[in-house]
Length: 152
Image (cartoon, rainbow, N blue to C red; front, side):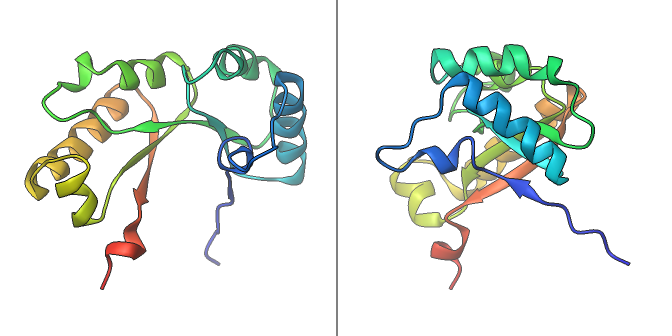
């Protein structure tokens, strides 16, 4: 039988609605409950984006989760910057989670108009970022941002 893995984004994507704000204690309690529910992956947030997420990643490792693997979320390296010099990738590594979720542009419109990069350069940014995180012993999940907007 094929195993299906559950990936929960409540702690990051779930808080992007107006009027929703979780305290650090809320985030840690939700993490524990999601682990108890048997969720495989919990996206903890974007390391360095705010003091609450910095502290969350500092403390989540001490929860003693029995099942779930916490993921640090962030973007691929920036155009023209080596992975080892990219501040965002450094924060992902420093979050010390077993899993890193990398979001990257997957729609050619965004690659050209937002990143102002060629399709080849975008693929290099994705590949370099995945390889860099893997070289630090992390499992990597790639989030193909706006994939279905660009899929035609």
